[in-house]
Image 1 (cartoon, rainbow, N blue to C red):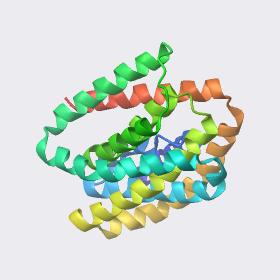
Image 2: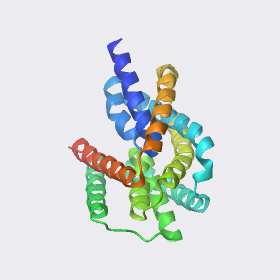
Image 3: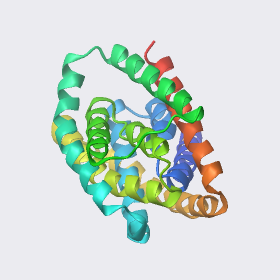
Image 4: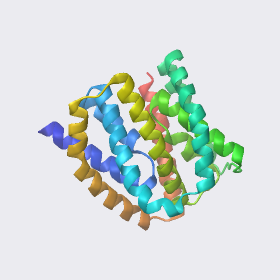
Length: 238
């Protein structure tokens, strides 16, 4: 019973974060889910619930999606997904995590000091490609897009809607790959079903938070999430 309560709290907080920012469910939920479930089950629960959140929100937020940017990051991710699998199979996973953590932390610090990126079609595609690589190598599609959109000072509504639309594709593909390669269990789907009411509550509270924060505060929250991601990966690599 205690584990079930902890599970519900984790899912609620992660859902609020994902809804408010368009990012953060995996980083917030996965480390704790790994303490409660087998790795395969933890990752698949994360993918199922992230996919559910994206499905619900994209219907409401589609008007805010930058369609042209979305198409380019999607095209880039199609190239990046198989590259990420190759990286995962060939690279030392801890060294990979450490390298990515240093990259995320360095770029986030640069952004904090007002370093900016000029958006272009080519850079949109590269950001999508890097996101695809990180999806199949580490299960983390968010950081490249957040770094890129923060660097281009993308409007908070556009950032959230475009990343959520992208996640709809990337999480669906990742879940198919996971289920096909590693298989799935009844526990995965049962606990995902148990979690849906708490995800729904998180959707409501996350939307309220999003509507209350301005662009500056939203940007600050994104930086906190990026720093947390970089530090988490660094600690996890040891």
